[in-house]
Amino acid sequence: MPGLKQLIPVLLAAFTLILGGLVTASSAQQPVLSPEAERAAIIDRVNGYFNALQHLHGRFSQIGPNGEFSEGVFYLERPGKIRFEYALPNPLLVVADGFWVGIEDRNMKTTDKYPLAATPLSLLLEERVDLNEEASIIDAREEEGFISVTFEDSGGAAPGQLTLVFGSEDLMLRQWIVLDAQGLRTEVSVFDLVVGTPVDPTLFWIADNATYDVGDR
Image (tube, rainbow, N blue to C red; front, side, top):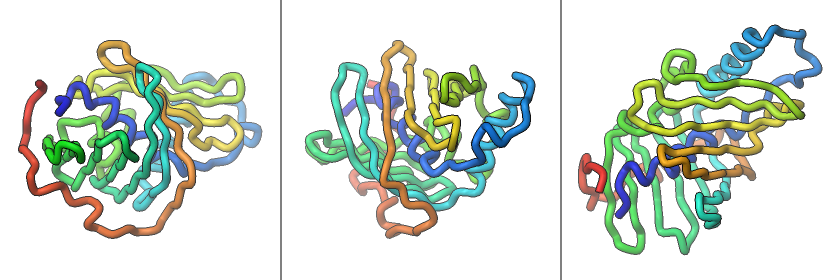
C-alpha cells in the first residue's frame, strides 16, 4: 500500500469534485473590480458554495503524473464525508467518514486509515469553510475565458498546490490541477453531477480491516 505522502494527489482530487456544481452570474454582469477586489470576490464565491453545499455526487476522470488514466464515481455529504471510488483496474477506494480517511486497496483487501484532520480533505469538508482563513491563497485570477484559484494548506500538513480552473462565463468547474511536493502533476475532470440528493449512508463506512493512523512508508 502507498503511504499518505504518495496518496496526497488522490486526496486532493476530492477537493475539485466537491466544487463541481458551482454556478454564479457571468463576469459580464459583474461590476469592474480592482485586482484585489476581484481576487477577494472569487474566493468569497468559492467559500459561499462550500458552505451552502450538503450533498453532491457524480463521475470523474483523472490523468496522473505519468499519463495514466483513471475514472470512477464520487459521493459527498458535508460536513466530513466523501467516497472516491475508482473503476477497475485502479483498485483504490478513498472514504472519509467524518473523522478518518480510509485508503482501501480492493485487490490486496487492505485498508490504511488516517485522521481526516491530517489530510487535505479536511480543508474543504469542514462544517464552515473559509479559504482565506485556512489556506494560503497563491493566486486567484480571470484571463482568457477562465478563472483560476491556486492555494495550498497553510499549516503545511499537506504539501503541494491545488489549482481550480472555471469557465469565466458560468463559473462551472472545468479542470483541477495539483502539483505535489515533488512537482508531479495530476489533472481531474468532473461530469454528470447531481446536487442535493442524499445517498446511502453506508457508502461512507470504512472497511473494518483498517490499520489506524499509519505513517508514510
